[in-house]
Length: 249
Image (cartoon, rainbow, N blue to C red; front, side):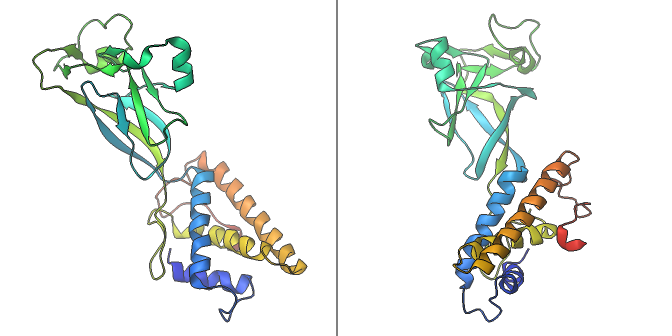
Protein backbone atom coordinates (compact mmCIF):
# COMPACT_ATOMS: atom_id res chain seq x y z
CA UNK A 1 0.00 0.00 0.00
CA UNK A 2 1.90 3.03 -1.25
CA UNK A 3 2.03 6.05 1.03
CA UNK A 4 1.78 8.39 -1.97
CA UNK A 5 -1.45 6.68 -3.05
CA UNK A 6 -2.92 7.08 0.41
CA UNK A 7 -2.00 10.76 0.58
CA UNK A 8 -3.59 11.34 -2.84
CA UNK A 9 -6.79 9.65 -1.64
CA UNK A 10 -6.92 11.60 1.61
CA UNK A 11 -6.42 15.15 0.31
CA UNK A 12 -9.74 15.42 -1.62
CA UNK A 13 -11.69 14.22 1.41
CA UNK A 14 -10.25 17.00 3.56
CA UNK A 15 -10.49 19.77 0.97
CA UNK A 16 -6.78 19.93 0.29
CA UNK A 17 -6.52 19.09 -3.41
CA UNK A 18 -3.87 21.80 -3.85
CA UNK A 19 -1.73 20.52 -0.96
CA UNK A 20 -1.82 23.86 0.83
CA UNK A 21 -3.36 22.85 4.18
CA UNK A 22 -1.39 19.79 5.23
CA UNK A 23 2.17 18.73 4.57
CA UNK A 24 2.93 15.21 3.41
CA UNK A 25 4.75 14.60 6.68
CA UNK A 26 1.69 15.59 8.71
CA UNK A 27 -0.53 13.21 6.76
CA UNK A 28 2.11 10.48 6.98
CA UNK A 29 2.10 10.71 10.77
CA UNK A 30 -1.65 10.10 10.79
CA UNK A 31 -1.37 7.28 8.24
CA UNK A 32 1.06 5.45 10.52
CA UNK A 33 -1.23 6.13 13.45
CA UNK A 34 -4.09 4.67 11.42
CA UNK A 35 -2.31 1.41 10.64
CA UNK A 36 -1.35 0.99 14.30
CA UNK A 37 -4.96 1.49 15.32
CA UNK A 38 -6.11 -0.95 12.61
CA UNK A 39 -3.69 -3.60 13.84
CA UNK A 40 -4.56 -3.06 17.50
CA UNK A 41 -8.31 -3.30 17.03
CA UNK A 42 -8.44 -6.21 14.56
CA UNK A 43 -5.67 -8.42 15.92
CA UNK A 44 -3.80 -8.46 12.62
CA UNK A 45 -0.09 -9.24 12.14
CA UNK A 46 0.11 -12.30 14.39
CA UNK A 47 3.48 -14.00 14.15
CA UNK A 48 5.65 -16.54 15.98
CA UNK A 49 9.18 -16.58 17.27
CA UNK A 50 11.42 -18.69 19.49
CA UNK A 51 13.44 -17.84 22.57
CA UNK A 52 16.15 -20.22 23.72
CA UNK A 53 15.97 -21.26 27.35
CA UNK A 54 19.20 -20.86 29.30
CA UNK A 55 20.11 -22.55 32.59
CA UNK A 56 19.90 -20.32 35.66
CA UNK A 57 18.36 -17.49 33.63
CA UNK A 58 14.89 -16.36 34.64
CA UNK A 59 14.30 -13.30 32.44
CA UNK A 60 14.09 -13.25 28.63
CA UNK A 61 13.86 -10.28 26.29
CA UNK A 62 10.87 -10.23 23.96
CA UNK A 63 11.11 -9.33 20.24
CA UNK A 64 11.46 -5.59 19.67
CA UNK A 65 8.45 -5.54 17.31
CA UNK A 66 6.10 -7.15 19.85
CA UNK A 67 2.83 -5.33 20.42
CA UNK A 68 1.02 -7.91 22.55
CA UNK A 69 1.91 -11.43 23.70
CA UNK A 70 -0.84 -14.02 23.37
CA UNK A 71 0.69 -17.48 23.84
CA UNK A 72 3.84 -19.26 25.03
CA UNK A 73 4.47 -22.96 24.55
CA UNK A 74 7.20 -25.49 25.17
CA UNK A 75 7.13 -28.41 22.76
CA UNK A 76 3.62 -27.46 21.68
CA UNK A 77 2.25 -27.42 25.23
CA UNK A 78 0.92 -24.08 26.43
CA UNK A 79 2.45 -22.47 29.51
CA UNK A 80 -0.07 -20.36 31.45
CA UNK A 81 0.54 -16.70 32.16
CA UNK A 82 0.75 -15.23 35.63
CA UNK A 83 1.66 -11.84 37.08
CA UNK A 84 4.04 -10.55 39.70
CA UNK A 85 1.20 -9.78 42.10
CA UNK A 86 -0.34 -13.25 41.73
CA UNK A 87 3.02 -14.92 42.30
CA UNK A 88 3.58 -12.74 45.39
CA UNK A 89 0.34 -14.14 46.78
CA UNK A 90 1.66 -17.67 46.34
CA UNK A 91 5.04 -17.18 47.97
CA UNK A 92 7.37 -14.48 49.25
CA UNK A 93 10.36 -16.25 47.72
CA UNK A 94 9.00 -17.42 44.37
CA UNK A 95 11.60 -15.41 42.44
CA UNK A 96 14.35 -17.68 43.78
CA UNK A 97 12.70 -21.03 43.02
CA UNK A 98 14.66 -23.27 40.63
CA UNK A 99 13.21 -26.22 38.74
CA UNK A 100 13.34 -28.32 35.60
CA UNK A 101 9.86 -27.69 34.18
CA UNK A 102 8.43 -24.24 33.39
CA UNK A 103 5.11 -23.76 35.18
CA UNK A 104 4.30 -20.10 34.56
CA UNK A 105 5.28 -17.23 32.32
CA UNK A 106 5.33 -13.99 34.32
CA UNK A 107 4.26 -11.13 32.08
CA UNK A 108 2.70 -7.92 33.35
CA UNK A 109 2.93 -4.15 33.48
CA UNK A 110 6.10 -4.28 35.60
CA UNK A 111 8.13 -4.93 32.44
CA UNK A 112 6.46 -5.27 29.04
CA UNK A 113 9.79 -5.90 27.29
CA UNK A 114 10.56 -9.13 29.13
CA UNK A 115 9.01 -12.33 30.38
CA UNK A 116 10.11 -14.33 33.39
CA UNK A 117 10.08 -18.12 33.50
CA UNK A 118 8.96 -19.77 36.73
CA UNK A 119 10.68 -21.68 38.13
CA UNK A 120 14.14 -20.55 37.05
CA UNK A 121 15.48 -23.22 34.65
CA UNK A 122 18.12 -25.35 36.31
CA UNK A 123 21.06 -26.99 34.55
CA UNK A 124 19.20 -29.57 32.47
CA UNK A 125 19.37 -31.09 29.04
CA UNK A 126 16.79 -32.44 26.63
CA UNK A 127 16.82 -36.24 26.53
CA UNK A 128 16.01 -38.10 23.34
CA UNK A 129 13.13 -40.11 24.80
CA UNK A 130 10.41 -38.72 27.08
CA UNK A 131 10.50 -40.06 30.65
CA UNK A 132 7.64 -42.25 31.84
CA UNK A 133 6.92 -40.10 34.89
CA UNK A 134 6.92 -36.40 35.62
CA UNK A 135 8.69 -34.72 38.49
CA UNK A 136 6.53 -34.09 41.52
CA UNK A 137 4.77 -30.76 41.14
CA UNK A 138 5.82 -30.29 37.53
CA UNK A 139 3.52 -29.50 34.64
CA UNK A 140 2.69 -32.26 32.11
CA UNK A 141 4.96 -30.76 29.48
CA UNK A 142 7.91 -31.58 31.73
CA UNK A 143 7.39 -35.16 30.62
CA UNK A 144 6.49 -34.17 27.08
CA UNK A 145 9.74 -32.28 26.59
CA UNK A 146 11.76 -34.90 28.43
CA UNK A 147 13.83 -32.67 30.71
CA UNK A 148 16.12 -34.50 33.12
CA UNK A 149 18.82 -33.38 35.54
CA UNK A 150 22.35 -33.58 34.22
CA UNK A 151 25.16 -32.03 36.21
CA UNK A 152 27.59 -32.49 33.31
CA UNK A 153 25.78 -30.26 30.83
CA UNK A 154 27.19 -27.03 29.43
CA UNK A 155 24.61 -24.98 31.31
CA UNK A 156 22.34 -24.36 28.31
CA UNK A 157 18.89 -25.90 28.11
CA UNK A 158 18.39 -27.53 24.75
CA UNK A 159 14.84 -26.26 24.47
CA UNK A 160 12.96 -23.16 23.43
CA UNK A 161 9.95 -21.10 24.27
CA UNK A 162 7.71 -20.75 21.23
CA UNK A 163 5.90 -17.43 21.47
CA UNK A 164 2.87 -16.23 19.53
CA UNK A 165 2.40 -12.50 19.44
CA UNK A 166 0.90 -9.58 17.60
CA UNK A 167 3.66 -7.47 16.12
CA UNK A 168 3.80 -3.74 15.56
CA UNK A 169 3.34 -2.61 11.96
CA UNK A 170 6.34 -1.14 10.21
CA UNK A 171 5.90 2.60 9.72
CA UNK A 172 5.50 3.83 6.18
CA UNK A 173 7.73 6.57 4.78
CA UNK A 174 7.31 9.10 1.99
CA UNK A 175 8.02 7.36 -1.31
CA UNK A 176 7.53 3.87 0.14
CA UNK A 177 4.78 1.56 1.37
CA UNK A 178 3.10 0.81 4.65
CA UNK A 179 3.77 -2.50 6.37
CA UNK A 180 3.98 -5.19 3.68
CA UNK A 181 1.49 -7.41 5.50
CA UNK A 182 -1.26 -4.80 5.54
CA UNK A 183 -3.11 -5.62 2.36
CA UNK A 184 -4.20 -2.96 -0.13
CA UNK A 185 -7.83 -3.95 0.54
CA UNK A 186 -7.58 -1.97 3.78
CA UNK A 187 -6.66 1.24 1.97
CA UNK A 188 -10.07 2.85 2.36
CA UNK A 189 -10.16 2.00 6.07
CA UNK A 190 -6.89 3.88 6.56
CA UNK A 191 -8.20 6.77 4.46
CA UNK A 192 -11.36 7.02 6.60
CA UNK A 193 -9.25 7.24 9.77
CA UNK A 194 -6.97 9.92 8.41
CA UNK A 195 -9.78 12.05 7.00
CA UNK A 196 -11.66 11.92 10.28
CA UNK A 197 -8.63 12.97 12.35
CA UNK A 198 -7.76 15.91 10.10
CA UNK A 199 -11.32 17.19 9.76
CA UNK A 200 -12.08 16.88 13.48
CA UNK A 201 -9.14 19.21 14.14
CA UNK A 202 -10.89 21.93 12.16
CA UNK A 203 -12.76 24.87 13.70
CA UNK A 204 -15.27 24.75 10.86
CA UNK A 205 -18.55 23.14 11.90
CA UNK A 206 -19.17 21.68 8.46
CA UNK A 207 -15.75 20.06 8.38
CA UNK A 208 -16.17 18.71 11.90
CA UNK A 209 -19.48 17.18 10.80
CA UNK A 210 -17.76 15.48 7.86
CA UNK A 211 -15.00 14.32 10.18
CA UNK A 212 -17.59 12.74 12.46
CA UNK A 213 -19.11 10.99 9.44
CA UNK A 214 -15.75 9.52 8.41
CA UNK A 215 -15.06 8.53 11.99
CA UNK A 216 -18.33 6.59 11.98
CA UNK A 217 -17.43 4.92 8.69
CA UNK A 218 -14.06 3.91 10.08
CA UNK A 219 -15.64 2.44 13.21
CA UNK A 220 -18.15 0.53 11.10
CA UNK A 221 -15.41 -0.94 8.91
CA UNK A 222 -13.35 -1.92 11.94
CA UNK A 223 -16.35 -3.67 13.48
CA UNK A 224 -16.89 -5.55 10.22
CA UNK A 225 -13.27 -6.66 10.24
CA UNK A 226 -13.57 -7.89 13.83
CA UNK A 227 -16.62 -9.95 12.89
CA UNK A 228 -14.86 -11.32 9.81
CA UNK A 229 -11.87 -12.28 11.95
CA UNK A 230 -13.87 -15.26 13.20
CA UNK A 231 -13.52 -16.74 9.72
CA UNK A 232 -9.92 -15.52 9.42
CA UNK A 233 -10.62 -12.93 6.72
CA UNK A 234 -8.92 -10.01 8.43
CA UNK A 235 -5.80 -11.89 9.55
CA UNK A 236 -5.24 -13.95 6.41
CA UNK A 237 -2.48 -13.07 3.99
CA UNK A 238 -4.54 -14.56 1.18
CA UNK A 239 -4.91 -11.93 -1.52
CA UNK A 240 -8.32 -13.37 -2.40
CA UNK A 241 -9.83 -12.30 0.91
CA UNK A 242 -13.60 -11.76 0.73
CA UNK A 243 -13.46 -8.58 2.82
CA UNK A 244 -14.95 -5.60 1.01
CA UNK A 245 -14.85 -2.07 2.34
CA UNK A 246 -17.71 0.43 2.24
CA UNK A 247 -16.09 2.07 -0.80
CA UNK A 248 -16.53 -1.10 -2.83
CA UNK A 249 -20.27 -0.84 -2.95
